[in-house]
Image (cartoon, rainbow, N blue to C red; front, side, top):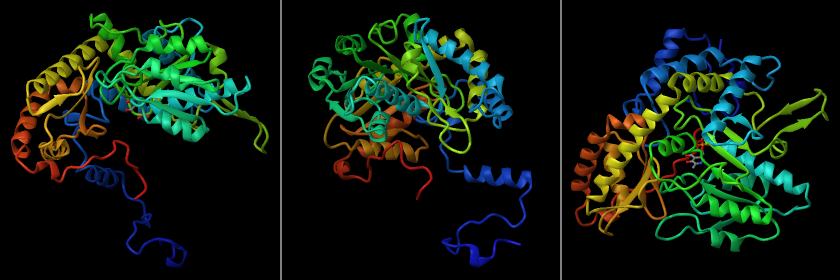
Length: 435
Ligand SMILES: Cc1ncc(COP(=O)(O)O)c(C=O)c1O
């Protein structure tokens, strides 16, 4: 018997309801698979955003490790020492990528957004203790939207500074001018998402250090890739803890670490900085409660998957994957440069790039629509109107087809009048659950 109609308050007449009798495993899985029928085919390299694939074997391993630890809870690692051990191994590996000093301490988090939220919360806590009650942070307009979220959540004023018009780099001098005695944090990205360039971290960190405040480097995208690019001889500015004034960094494992979703690291230069992140209370009826980050209950799934994938791919695996993603990025960038209808926004420093229309006659969002019709998922961004590609290892297999489809799409949409075509920008982060 289902729930009586009189109790189904607020439900629309045709709204789905809990089945009166549970479905079998097979039927449930069949229905789950049916639900994904129109999802982008990311495992086939059709998504230049949101999803990453190193190898089918690494993906299967992540899925299996996740399955085995999905019910374990990292809220209390006293009960699950396995999760303590895995997190500490992962942090040790990440700290080498970031060239963190021995004094560095971090936490495993659920993603780039949580890592950034925590860096801002920690800075706020640290400087509140020093008497700053109306804090602000200074960041380039290219810094990720998660900093805007942090500003809103933690009531830290956001001081946005335009990037350099030619290069898209953060402008350190303009950032210095935007700061004042209430500035607690400067932000740089390695690389920034929109155009894929690495900010002048050393200059920004020097300004922060001179003022005795924090500098966070958002390496959510580049934290795994940049160390290998450096090893491969790609010229890059200093971007990590090698720079003295850098006080914290974020690196996402669920991006170019190629592990399951829900995996990032926030790393602080020392334990004192990290001490402002956690939350503890005993002022309720449930006794002592503490948690390291934004989450309470924290699945062991992403932690086990990250531990497994990192060890499975290994140092040589990440080097090969980075080389492959980088070569593909450069091949796509060269094709865009060679097409007079398109303009590459910046020479990519890592494995992210964006491009727009070279003339007003071409609507770049109509190009994105054409690519979508051919089964490709790309991000649309503005300003200026652009297509964004996050290139990862899987695209080595698919970029020739992508470029052929891009050329065919351009033939179709570059006629007169397309600037008023159907294409429109859409945010990469539309709400997932509320309609
Ligand atoms: C540079 C950068 N920082 C932070 C984030 C946020 O990461 P997440 O979506 O894992 O919260 C992203 C996401 O694309 C990013 O590109």
